[in-house]
Length: 314
Image 1: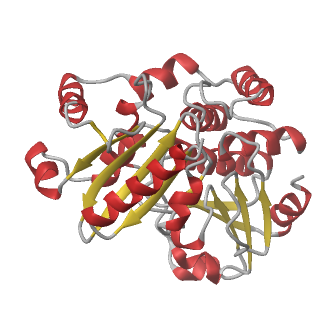
Image 2 (image 1 turned 45 degrees about the vertical axis):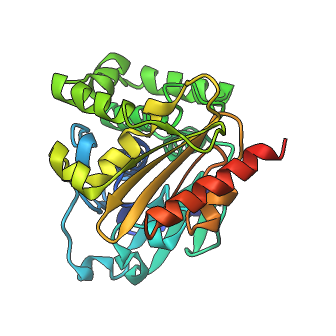
């Protein structure tokens, strides 16, 4: 499965690893994990991880990105992780590399690297990195195991989402055997301070049902974010979407968050393939978890109308 990418890693002395912007646990987990796998198994190679700040995942060992100049891309291999489109890649300098590769689990949107492995049957990009390590018989360090396990946990919803398979659990077990510490990882991921719980209650009180449909949403303006003291809209967009999960009678839920001249949209569903609606508005992702950006509140309401139509087709 990964023969071509494994050959490229062996060929190039410098490997620069990218992932999507505003990273989640999967983007960082797969990035840090792959970097550590290469460092452990090919100690003669130079490996860099690049991209924007880790945000709420800064607790991860290895989350501090490298700052490199353009010259580092000369004769290097750039590997992109967890990126369905070129627009989502954090640090577009990957195009300067001598060779490029991509590993991703999102719905395919087109080729933009020299080599690629795209497999939507995986719950996470981190899961693909774990499979890569197993397939290539690579030694897995404790640091790599913790990072990859974190990625699998976040994108599988703690192994609850229906993307979780027996393969997911087998790979997770392999990572625990390699030194991953689930107790520590869960504490870092899910422990909450009192202020964050109070903030979550504000979002719960903002939940609305769209036009008597099984579609719930939260819309947060820039002014509301400022009043809450929030400086990173992306963290709220993704971080608060699932306060609407598990509501009886709600099959689709969307979190809208104003961010400058756009509105960040996080779409989730327990039943429907909402990806076509995300694509309709310039986004993408998975069948039951996608994202997009729209220009204003009016367009956000148009998205909700399309989602309502989706539920009416049954």
